Structure formats: structure tokens, C-alpha cells
Length: 306
Length: 105
Image 1: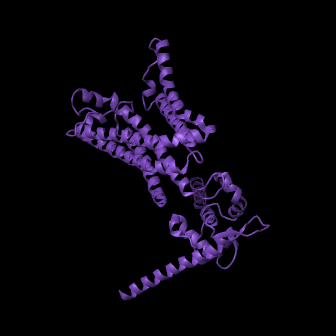
Image 2: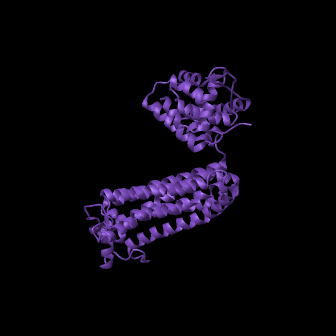
Image 3: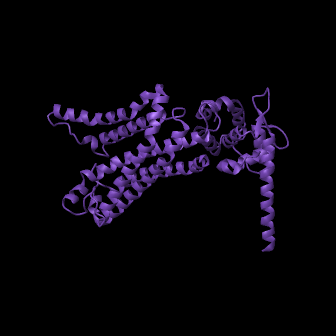
């Protein structure tokens, strides 16, 4: 059980390691005790200052909540990208062309499927705008206050470029092999290549988000900017909830109005299967819940400042 | 000056138990765990104990006592004692009110 000490932040260990070790040596290593130590380590990472090992100041807690919302937004972007593959080239598109369920991004409130898709688009645009309003001042401050972290701002664009590498390589291979290499193989979910590309996209998004979170981390942003960014972060969290509800509504309406959309037996991109939609909704719902929880927990702290 | 423990979420009850345990005199981590077990019949585990100890120490409710042993004892500060007194008074008033209601029913 002593190995679990390594789960704690270094600053915390500098304060408590010796005595904590003595306590652990006298405690029976039950599953409940292991879970409790793991929960304690998680709590230490979330609530303690990395340098001092002491509880974070209220403003640092608000900043953590804002960055949590940013991470939730990144997760929803991944979900939205996969939702796009369900509707862009699949049976939904064919049905649209045949005039059945209605256009995807055209305001048509009489058509519930279109209205749900419009609500999803509105949520996505709203989240991006709120992110820009709250995040831009933080980014500018971090850029000027922490020059040593400026290269971290390259993370998101670099991740975007890296995401495009597999399709470009596939396209080059397709041309070089006179069509022997398929250009759609990496977009086909459920296959080895398709799964590998999904994992690659996830890794790029995680790396890009981690870079920007680190760039906007403690000391890089002043209190005023953090307080300013809190309200937009509430807007981002609310937009993520709208996106999740709209996606669920789209799925329910599509299931009843155009059941053929869910006939696909494979997870090929562009074919809406119930499982694929459930995975997308699950990711969105989880991310939205984390974002809402973060802003709700920080709201009393933010109110105390005003 | 006292501290409002009820804002500490799931660590408010462990923090209160630690303050009660330290009321008679200094104890180290394992001593606190044993004392709480004797007082309440339930055990407080190491992860919870040190998460609560960290908060109590930071808020100035407890203080480590100098020791040669690697097991560092903690003692209650004046703020800690005042906070504990406040919490216990509130609890006592609530218990009296609840008992009187029970009697009235």
C-alpha cells in the first residue's frame, strides 16, 4: 500500500510523507483503505497548491473550474466531430437528399429533426463564442506574463495539424498506389485502422488541451481576468448542456421519424447506429456534467468576491 | 474568530471528529484514528484523515508539535478550540430543539 504515496503531489509528500507512511504501515491494506488513499490523492491534486501543498486560494479554485470547463468543451468537440461523421455522408444525408427528414442546418422549426440539429449547432456556436470571450483575455495575459510558456500555445494548432497527418498520408498512398490503398479505411469505425485513427484524434485533442491548460495555469493569469472569465465559462457549460439535450433529441426523433438511419450493422462512419450515438451522447453528457459541477462549486466563491 | 466547517463538504464531519479527538491533548495521526474508533465505533481511514488534517492545519485550527518521532503529533490551537466550542454549541442547541419537538409530538 506504501506505493500509493507516489499518487500524491510532491509538495504534499514533503509535508506529510513520513507520518502518512507510519500510519499506512499500521493500517490493514483492505480494498476500502486503498480506495480511500486513492481518493485522498485525487483530492490533493484537485485542491492543493502544487508548490506549497496547502489548499488553493479561492481564485485558484475558480481558475481550476474554468480550465475544467475548457477540458469538457474539448471532449464535446470530439463528440461533435464523431456526430458529424454520422450525418455527413451516411443514410441521413441520402434521406435529406431524398427530402425525407429535412435539411440538417436549415432553420425549419416545423421539422423536429432539423430543429434538434439546429439547436445542436446553436449550442456549439454559443460554446465557442463564450470560450472566445472568456478565454481570449486570459490567453493574452498569459502570453505577456509568462513568456516561458508561450510555446505551449502552439499545442492546439500543432494537434490540429497532427490530426490531419493520417488522412494526408492515406491520400498520398492512394495516389502512389494508383488507387490500391483505400482513402476511406481510416474513417471506418470498428476496423483496426479506423480505431487507431480515433485513438490518434483523441490523443491529439488531449495533448492540445493539456498544452493550453498548462499555458493558462497558475501564475500565468491575474485575478481580474479569472473573475471575468467565470461568467463566460458558465455560458460554455450551459451551451454544452444544450448540445447534449439536442443530440439526445435528434437521436430520439431520428429513431421514430427515420428508423432506417439506424439500420447499419457496422460502425462505418456515416452510418448512425444506436451504439455509436449512445457513445457520443455518453461523452457529451459526462463532459457537460463535469463542467456544470465545476461552475456550480465555484459560483459561491465567485459571488464572495463581488 | 472561528471557522465554518460545514463548508468543507465531505471533510466537515472528519474535521469535527479530529478536533474532538485533539481536545484533551496532542495526538499523532494513528492515535487520532484509534481515538475516533474508540469514540464512535467507526474507523476513519488514512486518506480521509490526512485530507482533513491538511485543511485544519491550513485554517490554523490545529498545529504540529515538535517531535523527534517521524509520527508528528498535532494539537488544537485557540481558534480550533473556539471553532469546536461553536460547533458543539450549535449541535447541542439543535439537539435540544429536536428533542423538545419529539416530546411535543
